[in-house]
Image (tube, rainbow, N blue to C red; front, side, top):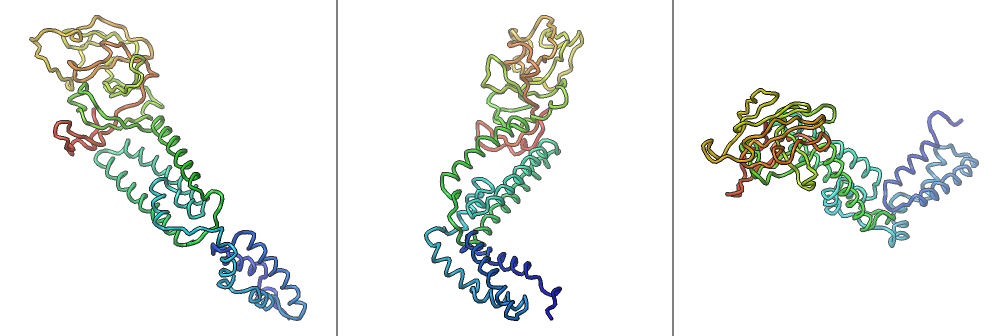
Length: 355
């Protein structure tokens, strides 16, 4: 009598199908057809007196070994499959994480990998903003290299695991270009508008705190749940120069009265200590329009911002207070610095937090 507990026919058929599905020679319809033949053959063999296990073995052998079936179906689909090239899969992974997986016929894996890399990128961006220097650069850079190597190797491994794959509709050059364009158009926009934004420093208005040639990362999350504070290095745009990003220091807060007397800033009648300020002209030189300013009440929900290099700064002395909604974020980290005269990196400034 057959031991029904020793052999699970349904499980055996599913394992047999899964084994065949590892080969790129079979389409889904091919597997359905082979499984149907197997299931049709087994009952007749059982009726002749064979056990379920014996019937399964005989039926599967009659259909053919995996190597034989691969050869047969490979000939049938020879005009409808493509060869996966590992080097190309790795290159596509560099262009856009997950694109190499899509190329090798794994769209779900491509989506999962891309979303995972995007989340890791967000985490590393926050680490860049929140960790103290030089860890705020070393850890994200090291982690980014590790992730990049893993992504490339994953694409190469996927291509090697399936040397041939059916030519699906999504395996077209224009699909890859469309995927790259979508990623290029959306992800930098979201990251730059809501998390971080990198910008160069073309003018000396914030010297000596920020030098010409410093490349600064701005924290776009800094004022998401709190208001700007006095002394912050805020980045903002103005209606007068909508395409230009300014970075200045917040000196006056909403509702305060601000005045400038002979280069000294007074807030509500009290002198502000400003050790970070730089003056190019000597105090005995001819006065400049920015050396003095009559008492001015800062409107509600507006801030008075000044450049640290007072003799060379277009700031609130000339264009007025900055509205709260115009402030985009806070200058956080100098991620690169290039001396404009020598065109050499200023390594001692990289990783610093300007304050």
